[in-house]
Image (cartoon, rainbow, N blue to C red; front, side, top):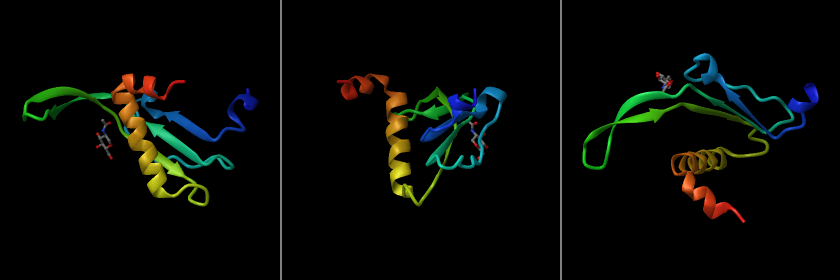
Length: 96
Ligand SMILES: *[C@@H]1O[C@H](CO)[C@@H](O)[C@H](O)[C@H]1NC(C)=O
């Protein structure tokens, strides 16, 4: 239904669902941001002791209307969001 996808603030686009790795999402004005989530891949990463471990990695690409939000705000949002996804127990601290 068109009314279900209009009047929002941010669009979350799951391009990973169809195998996409990254995108260049374009704003749906008057929304202020659009986020493209790539597919999740298991990739090797190093822990603090230099040991290799399998990590679930995805690309996140954000397009934002800089008349409304500046790049630093978008970067802080992205870092905060990443933190909450990586450590879901932090959500509890934000619940009232
Ligand atoms: C992230 O995007 C880059 C291209 O910018 C691509 O090479 C890489 O494979 C992507 N990573 C994942 C986990 O999809």
